[in-house]
Amino acid sequence: MLADIVFPECFKMADLGCSSGPNCLFLISLIIHKIQELSGHNNNYRSHSPEFEVFLNDLHGNDFNNLFKMLPTFRQKLNPTAQCFVSGLPGSFYGRLLPSKSLHFVHSSYSLHWLSQVPEGVESNRNNIHMGTASPPAVFEAYLRQFQRDFSTFLSSRGEEMVPGGRMVLTFIGRSVADPYTKDDCIHIKILGDTLLDMIVEGAIKEVDLHSFNMPFYTPSKQEVEAIIRSEGSFNLERLDHFLLPWNSHDVEHSNSDNHRPDKYKVVEMVTNSVRAYTEPLLSIHFGSFIMDVLFTRFGKKLAEHLSMEEPSFFNIVISLSKR
Image (cartoon, rainbow, N blue to C red; front, side, top):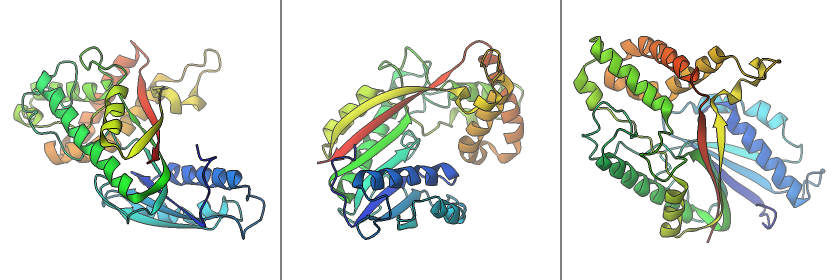
């Protein structure tokens, strides 16, 4: 993908939706190493090796300080020839972040399925916290319209910021089928909604609160993604692919050596903690922080029941784009 690029004196790249964990810097180090390898200057020819400027972007509430604390270790692991300058870039990527024609490479991983806001017109989505197979058609249409607006804005903003020929790689959770009524790919969100429904029956939360809550989260099909890219027009679609990521993919070290199947309880704990990390800020504002421990304890139990029946996977979409 980068092999045909003539590298500039300073190669500028951005990681959009970087979060605050170590995976972000690990990925940046891989990109830098690959660029040095492709440019043929990863063997101490410092005078010819490109310098690197890296922008780490996320919303204003992101813990950028945690990323900055990891920078010394990050730099130690780089090739000695790599001159890398890192800065934080707070703000929404659904809009301009940087000057025109200032970026050569953009990466975003597991961020673009988050919408800029809850779609308008989802009041009929009762007893659901997300678009699912039980949602009315108007709800699907509202979610799709919001995704179309947001993703088009994302592409047009990056189109302004990137140099001609610049490359962009995006990974996000998608939908495995074009028809959203045939399969619910966000089963973890459905289980969370079912847990909230149980708590209504017990009087722990109010029914009106559930009916007024929807997740700003959309899983597009590959066809929808391709159509928006072609319609917006700033980028050439070089490649669009997908892969399945099992829920137990991070639990290899706990696998049973006899049958290579991970410990179900470790998987439940991992998924519960992951879902809590990205949903609790929204849930606690709407329902109150005092129910969070009970909610996710019950969620974990429902998750375990589901895992006893099937081994789910996340459907991931990966696209490679070049700036026109």
